[in-house]
Structures are given as structure tokens and as C-alpha cells.
Length: 269
Image 1: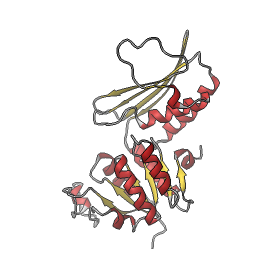
Image 2: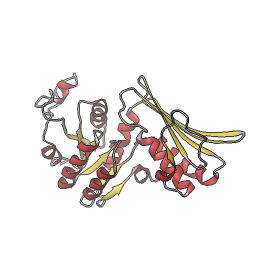
Image 3: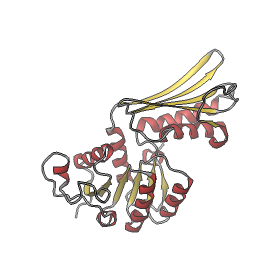
Image 4: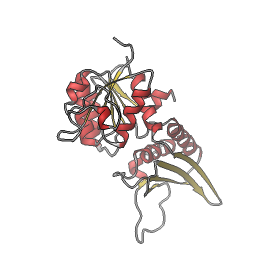
């Protein structure tokens, strides 16, 4: 038996699913345990390699997550909130590390993830890249250093297909800014302006979302005061940075105690 962790990928046919599969196949530190797709998908029962337009890989696409997870030491999940919650329960049952890049979750989803994390490690992050997680740390530090004379705005841009806004990364950055200020983000977040909104409220953290084209991900944190602005920026130009981070997290999670972790833990930040 290989000492390398076997990783299961859910949502195999999606853009991120395909990228994750290729990253695992290219890795010399992990193997592919199997892949899943939703029931009724045209890939079900077919060889994964053929579905992806290449040679057969000897991996059959399944619609039974529990069967696939039983053969895996880790599961990587960039699907939807409801699907991710279902996968979390099954991954916990299999005692597999569950790496979650899904965004758009509400409090009810997060509560169910916390319940699953009592049985197996869950590593969840709105963004898996090293650069973004460094940006989160910088945002927290700058917000801590500057008072409310500096207005904070988080501006993010993504491709036209993204379904949630603000992005998970933008919310991570907003949380970091709020922590630096010593306030709760829910109390100061301003997520939309339209019409006659009145003057900006002192201390608010604003969010703006741009959608268009094939933008992988761009995030600015703007600290604006009278006479000066500080802009912290991260530009993602290749989706593979997220896949590499997720695989790194799956490997890091081996041997960890049940609980909830994030990329700060994985990266030692």
C-alpha cells in the first residue's frame, strides 16, 4: 500500500473538478482514489480519462460518494453549499480529511460542517492560494494600525459564471479588516449601494463585486483617507493556484485531529 494519501474529487466534470483531478494526477505526493458526479450525469459509469478527452485511466466516475470516500484519505470539494454539507457527513463517516473550497454558505451550512468536524478534520477556506492568505494577514495588520479616518473598501472581480457575491475571498478579507478593527463584520458591512444612499457611515467596511468575462479572481482592499489611499491587491491569473493549494491542504491534513482548520493553519501563518 502506498504511503501517499488517496484523494477523492467531487464534481469531476466542472472546471475546478478537472483542474483538481489533473493536479492530483501530476502530484508525486498523492494518488487519485476516485471521482464523483451527481446522479444522472452523462459521465457516470464511464472512464474518467475518456470523459476528459484522453486515454483511459482505469477510474470510473461514480454517483456514490460514500463508496468513493471509503477508499480515500481525503476529499476535495468545490461544489455547492448543500452538496458540500452532504459530503461533509459522508467524509466524516469515512474519517477522511475534507478540504472545502465551496463558497456562499450560510450559518446553517456552517453549523452542519462544525458537527461533521467533530469526527474528522475539515479544512475550509474561501481561497486556497498562498498569496491571498498573505493578503488576509496584511489586511488585518493594516486595519489594526489605522483608525476609522481610513474608510475600508473590498473590491473583487470574477468571471461571469460565478454565482455568489461578495466572493468568499472578499468576505475573508472583510473579516480580517473587522478583526483588525476589533468589530464584528456583520455590524459594519455595507454590501450594496444603489440610488440615494446618503453619506458613507464612518467605520463601515464596504464591498463591491464585478462580474465579467473569464476573470479568475482579483481582490483589492482599499484604505482611503483624506489625501491618501493604501491599496492591497492580489491578482489570480491561473486557476491552478487554487487546485495546488487544495491538494497541499489534503496532504497536510493527514494525521490531524478532528476539528476545523483553514489555510492559515496549512501554511503556518
